[in-house]
Image (tube, rainbow over all chains, first blue to last red; front, side, top):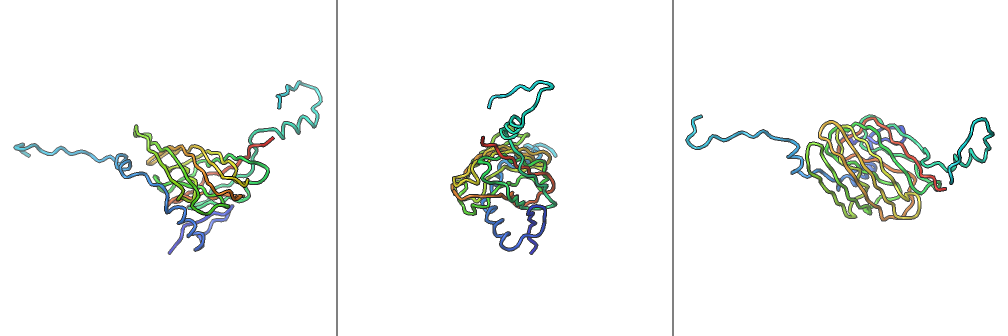
Amino acid sequence: MTKPNIQIEDEVREMTEEEYADYLRVTEHAFKVPDVVADVVEETPVVDEPSEGEQL
Amino acid sequence: MAVKTFTDNTSLPASDINAYLNNGGLVYIKQQTIGNAVSSVVVTSAFSNDYDNYRIIISGTVVSAATNSMYMTINGSTGATYAANGIYMAPNLGTIGALSQAPAVTGFWLGISGATFSATYDVMNPFSAKATNVNGQSASSGGTTYNNTFMGGDSNAASSTGFTIVQQITTLTGGIITVYGYRKS
């Protein structure tokens, strides 16, 4: 499995197993935008339902 | 120190030059350009006995996808001793979101990123054998944008000499991390 890249000073390379474990340890509790906010950001168009008896 | 007024064509004593150099405010320590598609950026030799408090600026890094959090860890503290509060706002919404993370996290929260992300914040006592505090703001532009203010602490009193910027899930490309020290006297 390809691991994310880490940069140490000017060197960029793939994380070692130990570095990847550290990365996961930090990000496992990382805060995510609540779904309710994300849903509002991703606006969905509203389609009117035809009323009863209305001819399509 | 009182501010001295200099006049033209008079001698400038070395003592005056040294006094002003030694009593400036922020002192540049180091700068690091963020590489391509990295999820962690390690900055070494940033904190020392020279300063107690630091200003860090992350300027214009490009995030591979928005709505993920950025964190900072300090190298002397790897446990779940960090705690944070934060506020995040989206320009297209009139609402304010709040974040609270009790000591179960392993880094200081620096905000939710948009496509291009910048942050400026202060770090108090990372090198001293004391608890460390952080507070600051971050802003983003492009994509699903969020702007944030944050404050937090790490109860671990161990000394740190460097820090790591950790981007949740996604990657960072470009931008510059600059570290300044607040001169003590």
